[in-house]
Each structure stands twice: as structure tokens, then as C-alpha cells.
Image (cartoon, rainbow, N blue to C red):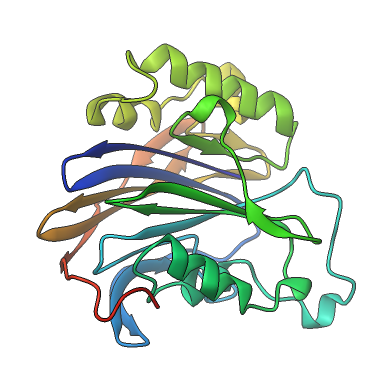
Length: 253
């Protein structure tokens, strides 16, 4: 239950991510710098399983995950199920698309529910990897738009509505302005709240909005928690993390 969009610029890009989550899930933990396999990254954390839905690393690579609610496959043994958020962390030291693919292939996918994983790199653009329970393979984005969305409720209709909203918000769908993406990720209609980008249902709501900025010398992450006052979203004080951007050491991980 999430929405991600992005736009490129010379030497980098901007990416926005709304995390939608069930009310029964534990509170999120704000982002903080961390290290994995010698690489520095910043990521918020899931309060239940310790994984994450998004990270940005020192190489300017952002990795984020959306659940695939359209897939009917589920891991057979729930006792040994692996949280999808750990797939993102497993790729924290990757420097490029090849590194992400290699690290994902090493993971216990047969014990992991279906997902889409987006890897956005400054010099390579977007890679979407799809795990459907049978295969891990690249997925083509609808109409090539810089947009992905998911929902456990009325999946196809929600995605269609958000895609239409994207088209109505941005003037150039394949090269949106940063201000347009910021407005898109705050789109909320009280009467159609479940279909909104900044969404709310009785059992779920948008928990946070993240803005990743990648520039030639710096990687930034701005995390805004969302508190709901009845049907009104209140954006709380943001947490900001900044990492010096580095060149990959010895190629992709």
C-alpha cells in the first residue's frame, strides 16, 4: 500500500515515497545512517520486523519496495516467512542495477511474499524487479511512467485512480517537476480517501512521506511522519539525513 514517483536531473534525481500501512502495525522508526558490507546508507525502519521499505546509499542508489497484492502465491510455511523489508536491506551495499540483481538472487525468495523492488541509480535510471513466487525478473512499467503504486484494497482501481491523478498533476509525465511530485504525494480527497495518494481508510493510512535527493556530491533523505486528525493529514516535523556521495569501490557489490 504505497506510492513512489521520481524525476531525473543531471548527476542525480528526486524521488518521493508514501508509505501506507495497516493501523495494527507498530510505529515506524525514523531514518538514521547505518552501514552494511562497508557501505553507508540511510533508511527508516519497520517497527514490527526491523526491515525497511526504502533506503538510499552513499553511491546515490535508492532501493524501495512495494508489496504485490495482485499475486496469489504465498510462502507455504508462515513460521519461516521472511519479511519483504529485509530484501531492501540485503541490497544496501549495491552500487548499481547489476549489484541489486545479484544480491536479490542470493536471498531466500521462496520464503518471501511477492513484491516489486525499484532500484533508482543516477547513471542507469530505474530498474523494477518483480518476485511473483516463481521467478525474479525485470518488470516493465506501465506506459514507462516514473510511477509505481500498490494497494491491498480494490487494487486495480486504486492504481488506476492514482495513475490518472499523476497525469492530471504533472505537465510532462515522463519528466515531471519536483514541485509537481511533491504536490502529487500530498493529494487527498476526503470522499475518495482510500484511492488518494495520501490515503486513509478505517484500517490503514499513509504513515510517512519521504523525499530522496541525489546530487553529484550528496545524498539526502527527508522523512515526514503523517498524523491523522480525523480525515485531515498533519505533516509532523521532518527528520533529515545527509550522506556524502561516494564513487563505487571496485565495481558493484
